[in-house]
Image (tube, rainbow over all chains, first blue to last red):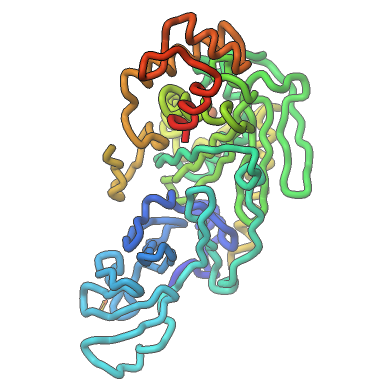
Amino acid sequence: MTLSTSATADHIYAHGLRNQWHAVVPSRFVAPGGMRKVTALGEQWLLFRRSDGTLAMLADRCPHRGAPLSLGKHLGDRVACWYHGVEVETDGTVSSVPGLPGCNLEGKKLVTSLPVREVSGAVLAWFGDEEHPEPGELTLPDPLTDPEVDAFLCYAEWNVPWRFAMENLLDPMHGAFLHHESHTMFEGDTTAKFRIRETDRGYFFEKTDQRGVNFDWVELCRTGADWVDLSIPYPPSAGPGGPFGIVGMACPVDEGRTGVFFWRYRRVEGWQRDSWRFLYKTLIEQRHWDVLEQDRVMLEAMPADADQHENLYQHDLGVVRLRRLYRTAAEAQSA
Amino acid sequence: MTDPVNGAWPYLYVHQSRTHEPSPYEYKLAATLEQVFTQEGHELADVVRGLNARQVHAADGAPWTEESFRAEMNRLGA
Ligand code: FES
Ligand SMILES: [Fe+2]
């Protein structure tokens, strides 16, 4: 079945950590009454939405002979496999075997079904392994639940290992170089000293001598899902409201691919909120995209073994810390 | 707007917040608004004065008031 407890630490490190929540795709990717095949943590899944909006996530594998359920038919409250018609409910129970009524598959829960939640426009799922099917607690990123904060989600798919996408976020110094030609990160020193500051949910990696100028700090938060929080100043053209922030998450698709989720948020209300939203849709979203493309181009060009032949320096402490944390978790989750 | 949500990898799509391609009026208003924020300030009164001074008016041609500007931003930024 899926997400076995016998996977090696290397496999887990390459394909994503289990026993936590991960963002999978934007909510709008699954229309009411629709289905969508997705790959996550190296496995095939089916997202399946009833017409009332209820969402379910099943392993994309028919319990009969393994055909992908995503090729099947949406029957409203269940899906019928195209191959021999076996019907599976949203919780993974076989409701009917049309070819052999009364067959002993009927009534058995034979398909893995993952707990799902929808958060600020994204589908989050609990990827428990065989020993941890029950969903763990999830504390949502505070900027996404604060009513005084407004956010836009940007989702993109990159041909990079998920760890590289996360490491890029724990490496704030790249802002002053990679993003020097951008609408937000053209200012600030190109030298800095960093420190790690522990919190009860993760750690900050931050410059000791500059704040509020470039991409100067980042917080890694492990609250049931892994996410980062950071803040970057806007130029005056963006109007009142101060800097914008990013809540970032990464979906490990497989060992070479990642879905990235960036909520660009701002603490704005009233006409200030409305004018930011207007400018964002009309002009600013494109500029944010151009910055994100700089990251994608760089990360996709990195060799797959980039993290094995490095010469690190003080600015890389945030990355080193992240790797150790993920490596340790992968070891603990392997058999 | 057709949203290319068809499951094809990779999904790389710039405009995820839009419901429509902005009209020439919207582009012009946005560009002028950025100029006004940069040159005049961030107070509502500054913004209304700055737009009117640049002759960039509401869609019906009327000069902006604080009320009409609020209402238009609310419509366009929803
Ligand atoms: S493989 Fe699905 S019904 Fe036979
Ligand atoms: Fe970046």
